[in-house]
Image (cartoon, rainbow, N blue to C red; front, side, top):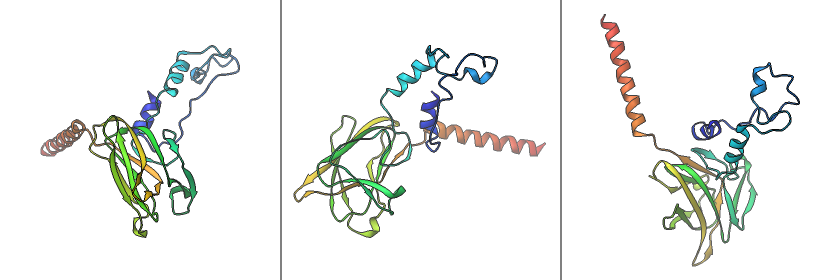
Length: 213
């Protein structure tokens, strides 16, 4: 639950590690931190080991935030190439100029693609869950469109979704589909917004009452 919350609520947190796998022996049983372990000194697994094993083997999910093109949840298929470019975020992006695509699972209500300038244009076929593939045009022939954000899906239910993006073949062949990152967003919960407003109003009323005394 802690690992999932870190990805869901704190996408900026970076690497999260488990502390620790085991100790060499049980001579430190009097220390509180001795019990932060996955297995006993003789490698007998504890329940947390089974829980982490099950969680790690599950379908990875991309949570809200801005993610690089090599995010661990993304599965690429087809002919992709990594391109070094100082203009790209972290100096690199990936592209395909033929039949290629990617798929992953994400949690949120909208998904955008961070792409780069190219000398060609084309169409990407975007499929969300079991819905029909929707064409999304990308025309990236002007320098002003460097670092352009292209919306792939919007106004989705705040839930987990599976997306597949394919470079589509047009009348003149394939365009260049370049990926420098992906952006997942989640719309605020209406209930949460109402609670925040109520809390602000109650706080203001309480402060006014104290001043009136």
